[in-house]
Image (cartoon, rainbow over all chains, first blue to last red; front, side, top):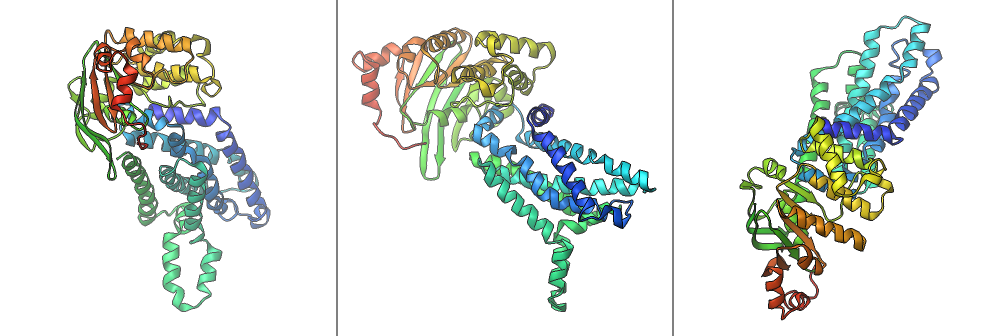
Amino acid sequence: MLTIFKRELTSYFTQPTAYAIVIVFGFLSSLLAFTLGQFWNVADASLNGSFFVYHPLLLMILVPAVSMRQWADEHYTGTIELLGTFPIKLGSAIIGKFLASAVVWALALALTFPMILTVNYLGNPDPWTIFSGYLGSFLVCLTFLAITTLVSSFTRDQVVALIVSVAICCLLTMIGWEPVINEVRRTGPEAKGAVELMTRIGIFSHFFDATLGRISYASLIYLGGIISVCLFGTNLALKSQRA
Amino acid sequence: MIEVTGLTKRFGPKAAVDDLSFSVKKGEVLGFLGPNGAGKSTTMRMVTGFLPATAGEISICDISMIKNPEEAKRKIGYLPESAPLYNDMSVQGFLKFCASMRGLVGSARREAVAKSIETCFLESVARQSIGTLSKGYRHRTCLAQSLLHDPEVLVLDEPTDGLDPNQKLEVRKLIKNLGKEKAILFSTHILEEVTAACTRAVIVDQGIIVADGTPKELETQGGGSLYDLFHKVTTFETPAA
């Protein structure tokens, strides 16, 4: 697992991928914070309402864009045949690749630290609240990463992997996004059940739980469940394609 | 060293490999001949543990590939048909990666990589990115990874494909030399390679063995020509596997 992890991580940094993630994510997340998030006006030292809240919207597109090649490329180049004949368990290769991508995303999140420096300069934020914000974003990253891993295991075409992964991640994000929920709520009291269901299925409610530092077991089980099912599903998909 | 008994692979209703049995002993180079779609690559993928068999048994150095695949895979070096490589790595980096995947560390890994580079004449491109290599070098890089752990069994799927005549000659010589100490199973379309490198050969057609013997025996069966035997025992067109 460690060998695959190192190879994948090196591959991110020997190609422009990792640098593109760090720069694009850093730029767009700051841009959203200073424009839509009205960073200067809301005076939100926790960064929740101006900065972190836009992360799922960025991640639902950027995470699949970065990880679409994960297994699709192995199929396309045929290197999956090499991996499949090395004396290793397939599961360790899946985890190794997943963790390497996770590290790149952790780095991309960490490199938004100028935002923390800024709020520390301007005010007196609670470091734990900010840490919770990062934790929430990272959990969303891992969830979208696992979904992309599963989708990329089904195809040798990276573009197909991208489109399908983005569609699933967008659905999970938008279904729980406040403006969408509000639209459904406006249809009348009979939509209460639907609103409840959308809130539970959508990423946002679980994301907010984490960013506010009150992540519940239900949220952990939900996000952890998606990650586990997707990684386990990847294992099954890769094995069944050979059968 | 390689014992294959009743090996069958079905893709839906179609049998790509049908009740195939053969063995390769130490010091033997078995040529695996057959037209396109005969089931050669499918057989090799099952022998190396990449594809699961629908039925049958594969034993590598007395270890079952079906029951104990990880242990059996340690004994095999494999060159897949398309010589797949990671284009973003250097030749040396790729070989180091493969050696690590084979459990080699430290000086053992360094020595294994250096030896493989030397054996496959890759010194001049060792630090070059794989993505910039010619087909011949790519093929030799993939061949080099199959030799890293000095395996007892080598499975080579068309090892001379894409090489120029000089490189073909070198690889045939290499296979012949390696065959003295190892059991080698290699597939080819080129009938001359059977006489040049093999101690024994089988001809496969539509998933079954249709001829088996030493190159001399096969030539005799074909009335003095391996080509004639090949034409006689194989169908002209076979569906893709």
